[in-house]
Length: 290
Image (tube, helix red, strand yellow):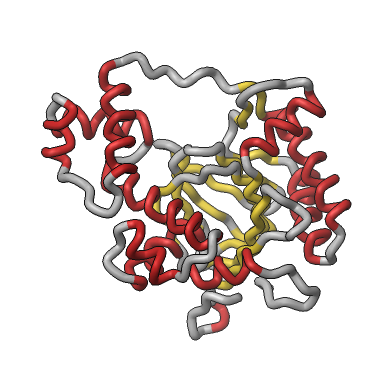
């Protein structure tokens, strides 16, 4: 599964997949030079172990960098980007464990119950990075026992050093309530959303007040959040068996190329490659990044 440019040295290569015996965890092994991830979020956590080069990414309002021996950590629903931090790009192995899995590990290993997360977007821990790489290699070899064990070890290690229980999200201010209501309306009308002016009028506020509140609440303006939400819903449809063209129309994109463009800039691979990687078991010898 390859997304490639013609010149070998600057070729972007990526494989996004799921091992059938590791439920709740997606895997991405990629080398990117020209890729620039649009601002987006994940419903899952992100553990990205950099093995070569440097990735630069906006995490909230901060621009941070991660290199070899470091792990980029992103909590669910936190907006971020991603691009090459050096001319030669970056190579990484990424895990996307869902929140329920991380919470179960936190409760089992550390007696932490309820929502947990990480406090730093980049962790400088070469051993933890090796554990993330080890999860990938064990899964590639069909050794789900080892992959599951290493995943639990690295999660517990990072929670001890750079994580813990998350504070409750404050949502009492009028602006936050308006942002939450706007999000709900956009989710309901994903295939035919209102303009910002109409959305604000429906909520009894002004367009600029709603825009400020939404960006403060979700880290991006409503139109960018809607694109992110459409890609999320398209992923769910692809997982359920829909073809990319069907998913594109169902979530409000004008056509499949429109979905392809946004999907690739948020997931890292095109929707067809994502669907194939999630649908089959890894076989030793499958192509992956060099």
